[in-house]
Image (tube, rainbow, N blue to C red; front, side):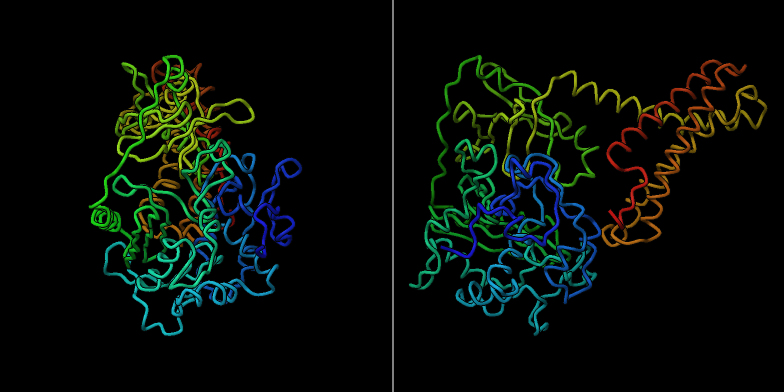
Length: 520
């Protein structure tokens, strides 16, 4: 037996780690859930991503730096949503059980036995041996990130040493004739167990820091990674006996192209097989068709946007199912493998799973946090219609300003109180100038928003100004309704002010009004 039992609640295994789980009594979070990213936690916040200047920070201090994100947003052990805090929590449990710090334990029990003597979770002592990372322009040198919770992704290694890791996984725990792990341990690492789909018997998904992926029509296992100045991807196929590791010192789409070419080369002599199409009844197919809205965003701050933009429609046409994002995207056939599992064309296994949660909602689960609830069409289009109307009215205030401002200069619209049109316009401008522009003008968002800077303070003040001006504008527009100004202008002012207030209520409900990103 190992030092840790994956079914142990983290309250017991790592009692000094702060978190909140509203379902603690009925569904405690286990070590397995933390590694499989089914805790329901928000991903770590921007201030944690921005804290990269303390190479001596311990794991205890790193986990204590900002525990506010570790609140279960849905019942643990149901949906996968990537959270960088999960592996460090298990690493802390390992420290307590072993009496060693994480890096020392991994050095003695993993890296050295694998011959990975130069690999390290700290900045290499011999920095000259390490490649320099670069920004997106490929010219500006990137700083080295000393992240607060190193077990989530701070491993520095080389292609040759990562090859030893891949050989271990391909040989099911054996390296150069030496047994380091049991085959069943490797298989457990590759197999998800805690999502609704996994509990229904489906094995495609995210295991213990190791997820399934498709490479040129073949099933592989592995993981990707990215940090300032660097990106990497590792994958292997036990069935084919091949694997690869790729790392680049400039984050860009090039690594995906390299991965594709390498994958095609390694699998060139193997035939890609697809499981047969299941013969479902018309009734079974109709039960799958409908609209599916994302319910598990990786970052809670993006929920306000993703609930509108990340919705998919599954349609039934001539006996076949097709899936397509509601806004943009490609229409693809959703091929039944069983009554509750589906694949896309060219996939060797089912990659989408239709499950029912404890509330009776039907959920279409994917591999990497793509958990979408089946919702009525009127709900989807109703939300989009309201959002479109609000945005249109707010934008129209900018266009109308080119009419009423010059007109007032020449004595027109004098009967309409200036506050009725000016205040809603200022509200819209505060949203544009105080919130949207700071996100566009400077590419180094993490550093600026993770600290108290002019940029992050502008967002904080801009959202407050937008809220205050919106409510004041609605009062002013309502009072102007009985004025002698043009009826169309009065109506437009009232509608714009109402649209601004609706936007405030929506954004406020998602925690975006008065947001202090440096303290979030």
